[in-house]
Length: 451
Picture (cartoon, one colour):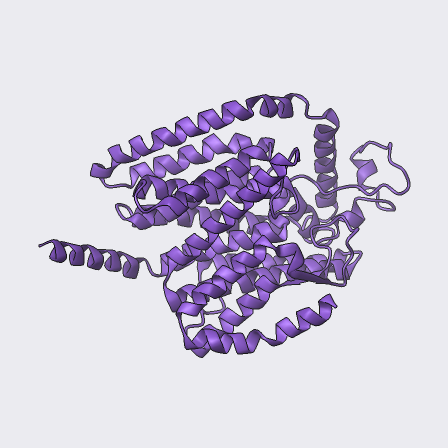
């Protein structure tokens, strides 16, 4: 039945695209629909060739309502002759290079179908990126996307509160795992923190609620890596926002930061016993497993440095009859039915599965957007738009560093959200002169009205 409903939904993509092309304002609702679909992702996605018991980064050829809406937005932008180029930015070119460098791993894969599942995911992620770019080409409405992301953060917080009341130790919101929630919320929390520093309290309640929600989600997951990144990322965001603000507004930012620091200290104090318990009682076996799996990844890279052992084939190659676990002296108290997990860092996972060239391209792709965020913060210095790249830059630092401890950046939902931020940065970079001119025009109009 689910397949029938999904087929009927897919048939509505072109008619929906036609409706979206009639009224530009409706494009905004389509993007909100994409973000809303993430909030109910498990019930609005379907896996073809599914293997739910496989321990890999993809368990099926997944198609979600979010992807169908992305296709409708792209088609609508084509109707309006504002469809983005296939490679609209430098970051997109680096991602496609990374994608191409992952393809040779197919030749070393034990299961090509599993490799196709991950490759399909990478294609769908790029579709999402192009759809967000297309939406911004048509609407030029950055604020609408930010509002949609704010509601998404608040919705996750409400789910976390529900789980907290129910006694769930590590809630995960709409994400498959608590580490996914914690990692995803870093760019949210930092971006809304920067917006608060720039805009203050007035007419800014949605963003403030999103800031509190995203930060609370990070703390309540008790994810050790995410908790360690909170002061680092917030400090970077504050320094960037403060440095590139107008001098007359810097004192205001300092005063606005004070209540956030106070709330943060109070919140952490309330959670401190559990947080300390989380650090002190972390099982030694968890640490040993991380180290042993990292050594397994090293063995795979030694064997296949250029192509890897096969994209999305880690779950096969880590187990018998392959001997990577034994070569890395992985603990042998495993039964016949035991299946080993995934190495707990996205960097070693990509290096092992796809080889050193693909790993290098992925790191360069990540870093290119961090550098872009820093450059845009400087380019939009003294304007409200500087808050977006400044906060995203702080969030990316947390995201990338935490990825040294987690493989979450191969999870579907985390990557979809990452592409939203990447598309936002690329749009601002491509239209920076227009956006600044628009702000000057608005300022001039306000002066004339006052006079």
